[in-house]
Image (cartoon, rainbow, N blue to C red):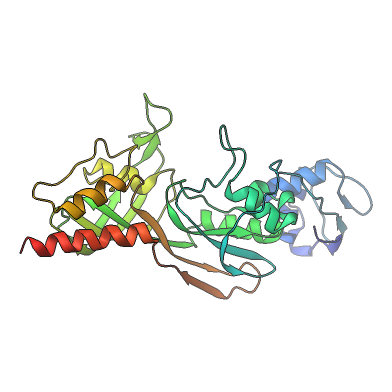
Amino acid sequence: MSDAQQKTVPVELSGQRLDQALARMFPEYSRSRLKSWLLQGFITVDDRTMRPRDAVMGGESVLLQPQPETAVTSEPEALELDIIYSDEDCLVVNKPAGLVVHPGAGNLRGTLMNGLLHLEPGLDQLPRAGIIHRLDKDTSGLLLVGKTLQAHTALVRALADREIARHYLAVCFGVLTGGGSIKEPIGRHPVDRLKMSVQKDGKAAVTHYRVIQRFAAHTYISVQLETGRTHQIRVHFAHRRHALVGDQTYGGRLAIPAGASDRLRDTLRQFRRQALHAEKLAFAHPRSGKNINLQVAPPADFAELLRALAEDTESRK
């Protein structure tokens, strides 16, 4: 955590509530965190404590003493992580399929969070060990982590403001005629609470996609998220009756297209995860503002699926 900071309240903030003034003066911290520190006495104004609703006049001396937060209770664990980018403020990891991001019931060890805490012990002071967004267990690809409280706050804010671009590769059932957008609200499934579904009263969700390659009975697509709802891509394409290959939660029973080659039949039977890979990640660096653009190729099982689909399609000609 950074050292104490002392600033003078600008005259133009005269008459504003203290909590509003603090948000303007210390934008690197979230409003909720500033309010918490204020109520705990870690922010003083002219050497005295004030209430969030108290007005400032301008010219007061504000002393901020940032406090570390033991926000994570997971144990550090030495895991082999594929770090694509890293500096003093943030890092990006290429998560393999099968790796759980956050510990939970039945997954207290061996998660990405455990590995990150071993790699960067200071992450135990950040919410969710600095992880900015999540990927499902069986989704591979790029995931962003903030290393400091300031970077984490800035990146979370950028994600909420849709300033972080995330592009995915996916293979779905059915032959799509072209690209487009899916704009359907998503909420918790009314019966199965472990699943999500399109709901009229759900949260707004927008998914953009384009066709990369059409196969005999499947389509290889590039997907860009405008919003980031839980399971958004999987739910949206399943709703359109184009569930992702291997999606055992939203795809229903395994479907083998008529006339499929033996190789494709075997590949589809063995592909037991959703065919979804977070290929590209683009964001403004939280400190310098420099544009960071990263890309990583899909893993071997995804590439093998594409080869089997291409070979099957060619054999039908």
